[in-house]
Image (tube, rainbow, N blue to C red; front, side):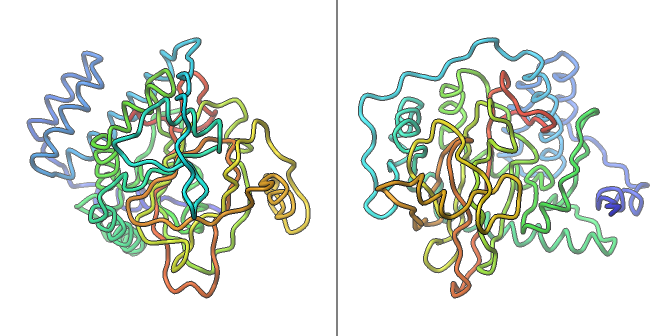
Length: 356
């Protein structure tokens, strides 16, 4: 089916509109011309923190993409993970995941937790009020996207599709929409809020040290999600469709209470060093894993459905076995942001890079 992007429709409706560049935008473009892309990102970030402006957010998004391409072009040849911490964080009583607070977060603890349980749960990575604010923004971005179907524009940047530099392309938008999501790249306002909050939580430094290289986000795998209770889960390991040899870290950030009153995740908090068998009873996608296989992989620990509060984050990599954990009796939808970070030295093919 031919899918014509909302961005193109919006451009056709408002092609005569010309935006006067802000002084900070012009300064950032000067830095860009000198190849100083990360300096330009920092400049735009600081300017937007002081006085939020959709133009600054769109410009920061554009330069982050160029910087992401630069990271792929200059990727190190042999990065290494850090030595794991000597002691693995204790598993939570309910989640059965290693759990820490944000002040404890370090690349060494991430590595130790991944090797022990395949994941690390950071309670309160984001302030609860900020998380709930982002959840409200997701609703707003959904509303704006629907408005654009009717030819309406969005001056505030809640939904503004970005076309990546050739040869990169994003053909997945329709599929993401059908799955209850919006690409964070297509909401410059929320992309800025999300990355700014991650930086303030020291995630940029932790992920870079964990990867052994500056990370790049995948535009197609950084998604704002609203999952309703009727959405069924499907067991999977993301490496089956992203690539088996990638260097990855996913930050799955809950923006609402979930696991009891809203869909959460069903997880296997066990380190898997390889991909489990796909297919079997009840599967319908070529990367999907059966309930029986997931239960077997979980072993004595068993399958777990953690309860998350707004601002809690689960970190894991491409080998982690999980699915959406939902029940039609749950009264509320779940809001979350899924953000996949990759080492440029082993970046998945055909994914659009965005620098952190």
